[in-house]
Length: 453
Image 1 (spheres, rainbow, N blue to C red):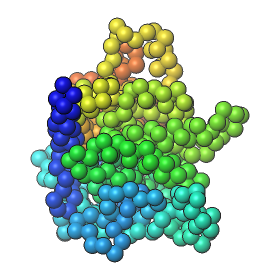
Image 2: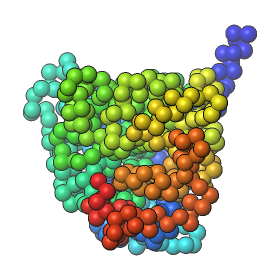
Image 3: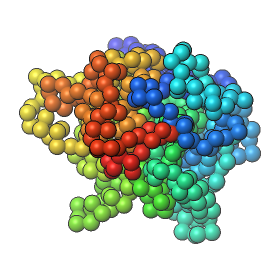
């Protein structure tokens, strides 16, 4: 019986690896540009309208990674290994939208046109590594306290501040990836977020060392705890050393383990004394998104008990009952995940409901939204233009779920996308909220204009 159980676990991990992200790349890693968020389409908003024109469709995207660099070795397809490093390298990657020769005019039409859109692949062409972030070195590393070793720190500060100076949006948005993807994945996803934000503000990919191995899921889960240390140091560095106003963070799948642990560490760092709120606010954490979260609901409950929820301005947990990848994870660990939230009205008490309502937390059900079942229903935050629409508005505003077009279920804590979400004019709601306010073409939402922050 023991052998049968063990064999069953091995088989399920094999299919689990396939479900979460398919086979490892056999060539240069690319992803396709996601369809425009519904908000842009319905209101004829083109975020590229005022974006800086470039001769080629190549843009720099910041990154931070605790993957081991290749060094003098020649990487055939990637820029960093899948092995863990004891340092945090920072830099910027050059990302091309489409093929060589693709123009900004063509990319604008990708958003404007009502016709069937062609696919534009995204690819990292090169990386410009600034070096190891001195701020994140090991405590026993003698270089950590020597300013001469902070070359990468100073360059990152300079380049981020230069970008923020030229932007209406003074925020940094970081994307943390999930299981079984290479270094490039979070950089490419971050580039899409930047694309639909008119490249206003700063976007960054945080790349932790997932394995890309068929049976690497359990090893990847172990990596998340160590990676959380580096994400925490990165957040502290950005908040205290740059001119950023808010740091928004999106975590997907196993990346939610990295983010939730980092935020909990920040909460614990704040202590229980009178300075707690000042310490937490010094990290400048804004809006946080957990999408398709492969994190135990019980563990999230512990983190909330440790007051993790006090660190960000607001948190969204997107979940879906058709996320097949998390269905397998649920089976493997025999514990529910935050990304396949199952609300049972008969089991939850009124006290628990009131407690949920008191938190700066939104539970948003993405089940049934257009595109939400693609890729085994696990990447709906990009695949569903309804969910991506809500996510983009959430990142840039303090709008309530109701003002974003969502409806509240009878239980009073779950928000859903109504069937008529596509026809709801969210833009009109924004105009009515502040008389005379308008959205400036070229950005998703300009906070200074709407005065929502």
